[in-house]
Length: 385
Image (cartoon, rainbow, N blue to C red):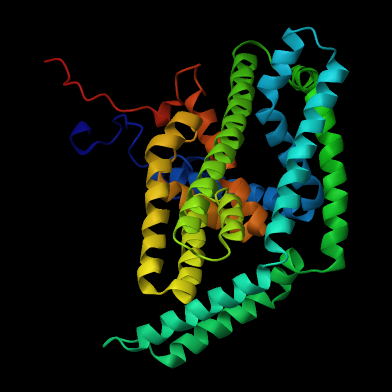
């Protein structure tokens, strides 16, 4: 009997025994390898459906979600300042008003600088960039492997279709509706930011009430990591953007490139979109230099942009932003793509800090310096003999 395995015990990895009538009970069908695979498949489907539902809901409430996220980011950036004023005995309401006024003045100053620098010279900037693109295209046509004109026409038509599509128009050029939504969102941002600055710690303590023991400790680690990561991102990115704008602006002025000031302002703005922003700013500056000063000057501009970005990436960012924003370039590009698809320009700006927060949470999941089990480095030490 035992020779053929009849009546012998089976291990957990073997197929379930078939009864005499040949019908396997449904409960046992879920216990073999295919059953486990089906269970995992169902779990993945449920998780994806929940994630899609959450994303859909957030997109329907962007007028609320985006101001709240921005308020959280600004409050995190000014958390050290609020903590310093509270430790010095400054009344909470006074500290809140000082920080809120500083944030509004900074945002207003940046907005005024953009309007002042770009509004009056935007037509010239656009026309010179367009002329530079046309000049570059004429040079490309002289190459032995020139691109077919029909392909270029198809690309241009695709870009025009995207710009005039309902989705892009709703998010970017919706006219009066955009102005009204911006005003509403800005007012909501200021109000929510006021409460985050004033009562942020008490709000967080209220949210922690359901947690006990290790779960409470983990939630506190997640909250501290979120605030520190968002604060480091805003302070570091703003500092890096300012240094980039000043360095490239001075370089453009020395090289005699026209419209150096609006180009420097665009460098500052685009610096908040990692990798892609610097590339776009460099291309635009090079096109303007190409039309105004020729090929040699345009190549100098490209070299200037590359040099500034290399100095920023290798020296400035590690000092100002630390390791909290140390993400691989591949991860940043994927995050930017997803953020742009889901939220347009605002999504591209918010995608990287949100990704950094998610990775930071993983890094403190099991302890202050202990990542989640699946994210830990594997030991390279040889196993004892």
